[in-house]
Length: 399
Ligand SMILES: Cc1cc2nc3c(=O)[nH]c(=O)nc-3n(C[C@H](O)[C@H](O)[C@H](O)COP(=O)(O)O)c2cc1C
Image 1 (cartoon, rainbow, N blue to C red):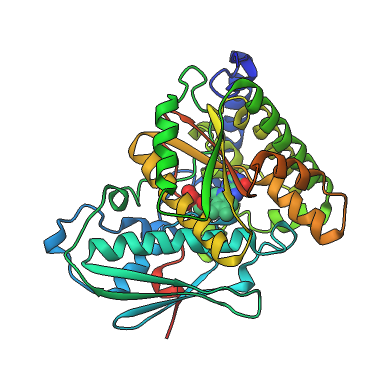
Image 2 (tube, rainbow, N blue to C red):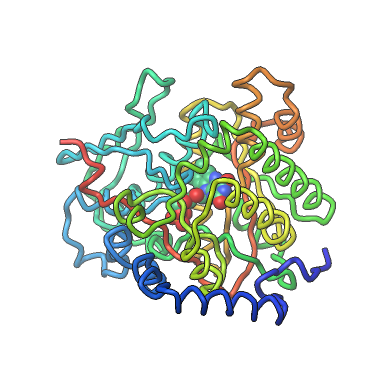
C-alpha cells in the first residue's frame, strides 16, 4: 500500500501545525504551566516507582545468578497483558509457584468471557518459565481448566537444572508494545514471518495466521476500524476501556497499572503537550479512532492472528504463552509489535448481549478452521517504545 501523508501524521506534521502546537505549549508553560509540566511528569518519562520493576537484571551470566524462586515473579510481571491490568497473583513456595487470576482486574464489557485475562496470564507463564531456566530451574507447567469458579490457573513446579539463559530472556526488559507509526517502506520478508510461525511448533493448540498481502491487509484493517467505531458507540464498553487510562503522574505512580499517554507511541513533543491538557473520555476516544485510522492500520507491514483449536481456558493460556514468545523473539530482530484486539472485543460483546455476530463471523472467516482469539500488527520502526507501569513483584504475591 502506498504511504499517504496521513500515514505518519506526526512525522509529516505541517509547519503551520507545528508552530501552532509550539505556540500552545509556550503559552501553557508561561502561564504557570511549568509547574504543571513538572507535576505531570513531562520531564520524567518512564521514571519513578511505577517503572522500577523494569530494572531487573537480564544480562547476568548463568552461573552467577543467585537462585531464589521469588525472583522469577519479578520477570513474570513484565509480561504483556490486556490494558495493563496485570490480572495476576502468585504464591511462591520452595519448588512450586501457583498462579491465580485476579478477577477484580477484569476489563468488564471489553472482556466479558475473560479471553484477554487468560491470554495475559499465559504471557506471564511464558516469562516465568524463561526466567526459571535462566536461574537454573526446570519448570513443569500444569494449566488448569475451569471457568470463573476456579481462579487458580496454573501450577509451575520447579526442579534443578543447568541454567539456560535464552535470547528471549535477555529481551524481557526491551519488549514493549509499540503503538507508533511503522515504516511503510520496509516490508517484512516472508521468510521472517515463516520463522516467527515456527515459534508455535511446540504448541499443538495455538497457531499463527498471517495477513500480509495488500488485499488481506485492507480487509483486516477495515475490520479493526469498524470494531473501534463499534466500541466507541457502545458507551458501556467504551467506559470500561477508558477506566484503565491513567492520565496524571500521581495516578500512574499510585496505581502502577493501566494505559498511559507515554505508551501511545507518539513523539515526545506531542506527549508533553497531551500531559498538560485535561483528557476526557470523548477526546480520548476520538484520538484512539484517529490513531487507528491514520497510523496503526496504514503503517502496519502485516497483521497476524493467533488461532486456537477450541477456546478453552487452557488454550487461551497457551495462546498467551505464544504471544509473549513471539513478542520477545520479534524484539530481538528489531521488529515492533502491537496487539489490536477490537474485533475480538466486539465479538465477545456481541455474544454477551445476544447481538448478531457480525464481528464473530468475520473473525471466523479469518481464522479458517480454528477460533480467532488475538490480532496484532507488526512492522519496523526506528522509534523506541516506552515502558508501561508495573506493580512490583511484592505487590502481587500471596503469602
Ligand atoms: C490479551 C491482550 C490484548 C491486548 N490488546 C490490545 C489492544 O487491543 N490494543 C493495544 O493497544 N494493546 C493491546 N495489548 C497490549 C497491552 O495493552 C500491553 O501489553 C500492556 O499495556 C502492557 O504494556 P507492554 O506490553 O508495553 O508491557 C494487549 C495485550 C494482551 C496480552
